[in-house]
Image 1 (tube, rainbow, N blue to C red):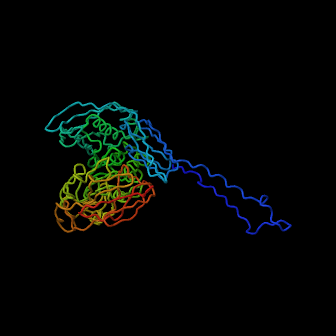
Image 2 (image 1 turned 45 degrees about the vertical axis):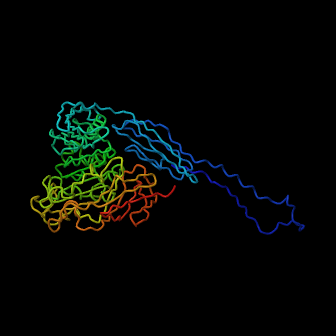
Image 3 (image 1 turned 90 degrees about the vertical axis):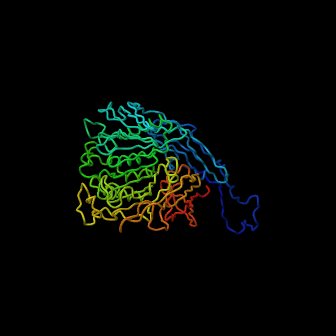
Length: 585
């Protein structure tokens, strides 16, 4: 809370009649005996601006800590370089941080106070020591295979009561980990957390020479979440994220063991149940990940097909008995609505309209909790996303468009310009003028709705899907940025933007999109742009921020979470920089 000084000036005004005061004899009274106005009360002494923070704060893992900021007579207080997952609660004038069980270590927070009439701000730092309070058993390498440019490990995890329910603690799980030979502390490689689908297992044939790979195992098919704390004896009660914890424990072990693994370039990927896991892990634990790639993935557990709801109820308890519990925590429309950490994530998704297993309602059916669909939430909450759909199924590709038709091989991991890092901002695009229409979640009359398969038709027959809207399309296609030239400062943010335009092919037939990065036209695409994941540029809720893009300039107001959205930015194939500036404090 910003405390302000009391009144700077006490002013007493005494009103009187404009006529002279006369005694009964008609002579003016002696000046010494005339009534006198009371002397003004002395103004209280002015306080100097001050900014006080603790030099060091110690917080245990899995325990919420608050760091009080005492600011007096300051116009504005900014907090930057927050630890992953920490937030500044302006109303309480405190940083709030609940480190998870992998975040022990030392962090430095920057606090800056701005006072009227002072050119130089007050600068303070807080050292945060996170103590290792939760220590599951360390993973153990049980087998090693070496190939050309890589080493593949079998890594065994033994659970305790943090990684497993009390009745199951002591179990072992094997994961596959691949280490690229070229990765060193001086030349770090990204990390890919690859999650398998329902009934699957880590592949013993996994290799990679360019990235670390972590392939864990979810033999209980928990959708990479967890199960009741009383299992196997009872289903009811709390449902801790045991499976997620095991995945994060493997990731923490890898990062601590191999200096060549880049903690700023960790990505989570998967398809089907693995896609659901990639999304829930990447959004609910967004502090650890630079991006999410999920295909044919469910997004709202309560909207799963009836047979899958029945299966998950054996792990999580029934929907009716768990209102506000795990079913709602795993609802990704809720996560994106409620969690600023999740809103700072970048998401890629791909779904098929003829998928009978995870039908297209996964992204278009509204959540019973938020009343919005996943696609609608991505757009309305201004989440960084590229969403693609076609007439494919649960694995088989679209019969007309083919495999990966939506770009010419853009990698958010290795692209020379439009890449993602956890420690860099990125532009979240929404409401692009080039978006195709995915439909409203209803049918077009060709197929009768089935609760298990939706309006899915025969994947081998083009144009027969029963879902309304375009057969194939995308949200936010062609839009790129130059992360090598970002500016992230306390009062200024700059992001060069441009359109991918080039390799590809025209639509294969009427009613279908182009392939690759080829566009149907060469004009501008208008899109709303929301900078995400900035480290220093963090406007206050309600603050007005100036923007400029080419010849266009104006002002926008920060939302309740401090995010700023510039509407209708006209992006072309010629790179131009979106600039945001705060007014002087």
